[in-house]
Length: 203
Image 1 (cartoon, rainbow, N blue to C red):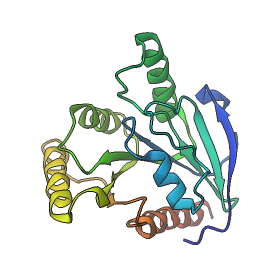
Image 2 (cartoon, rainbow, N blue to C red; image 1 turned 90 degrees about the vertical axis):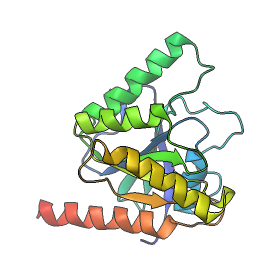
Image 3 (cartoon, helix red, strand yellow; image 1 turned 90 degrees about the horizontal axis):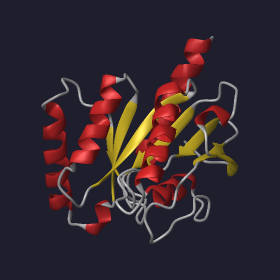
Image 4 (tube, rainbow, N blue to C red; image 1 turned 45 degrees about the horizontal axis):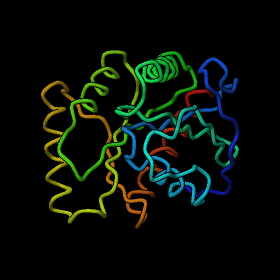
């Protein structure tokens, strides 16, 4: 897929205020500081489109970006940030759940996993939640440039083995690096194929 245009569209604090229409949406979510904003900027080829920060937990809204005037890339708040208050955590949990479970335009949710570390319970539990609710999703392992590839493959293998305990068929997954651009083409091609399938089914 060639990215011809990518622009900020709208931010919302409520899922029911997100854009109307039938344009497909590909949403990105993960634990705080997993590299979500950097990956989004890498995918669309614009460094400052999604705001990055060295302080985790900064994304508190649902942010829509329109790509090629054909589909939405959606930046969701991160989960698992320990320094949030209980009230704020519950509020964000409801926001995420409402979007993920009720948003008809959601075509696929990409769950971002830090490739540098072993499986985290919070990630496995979130993926289990998606499966139990029939939410279509894929996995993107981030920051693959931060370790040697043998360590990355080991951590990815352990994570997939954990998933295999509950899943007969694994979801699509990708290895990525926002620094080198590794995985960018594979992810965008996956989105393009999905969009083409949607278009053919609509005819």
